[in-house]
Length: 336
Image (tube, rainbow, N blue to C red; front, side):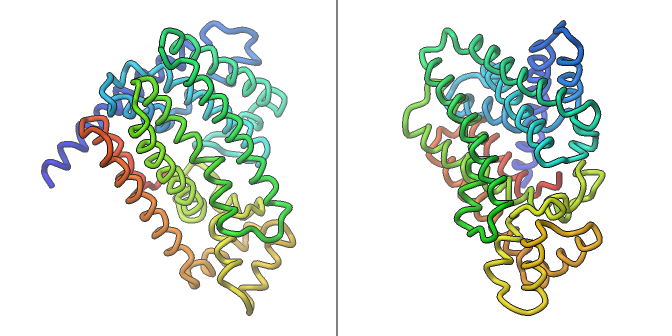
């Protein structure tokens, strides 16, 4: 236990150092850019902070293969810019008013500014990544993976939009969607770090498995937090997914297991009207609890966390691998 506490403290210190380096790259990525209507929203986005989970995974994956994690900070920063690009555009599509406790970009400015800033962020991410990998023997493979990852994330978001027009969504379809929309970017983060360190095929396969399970756990946990998190800590409107009529884990599972009665009619009305009112959110939460769907979601998260950690046994046992395991540990008790 004492050793675990010491490892956790060392890991937190390392993450703090990694975040500082990533933030330096983010600040420099568009420094001095004009016009302000394009670059001021970027300052706003990056200054919101965040855990920097994806670039930290990139750096730890690189370290797990035997190379310095700091060396992969630029690659990680490019992934963080890509991630924030997706958030800006997702918020527009979802009409979300809050992100990390602050007004979303399209609310603070307007949709046109948000779209344009997001587009420019994508170009900046590529510029940064190209500069970081131009001398790497696997530079083209990294760029190819990055490009396909971007396409996959967009396909996942498109599937999520399609679900809003699809009355019945199976759990397999839901998992396939979140694999593309959420897990793919986490997979990409791990693989780019591994390729930057010139990992072999078995190491890449192990990191893919780790990142896939971590990504699935992350999204299902996000669905849980959408209902149960403290609004101030979570930084988003609680129950936003239900207000938008999304086919979240809870709706998909409820539609599978509730076949008759008042609760079945509630789900039917949710699907037909494409969402519920704010006043109905407590009723939905109570229904999910009554049918064990929240417990089921939590257990599913834990199962994927354990699978992610098991995949790490195939990697060299070093500080990078321990760091990846610690991320999974923290994911299991994530509250924001």
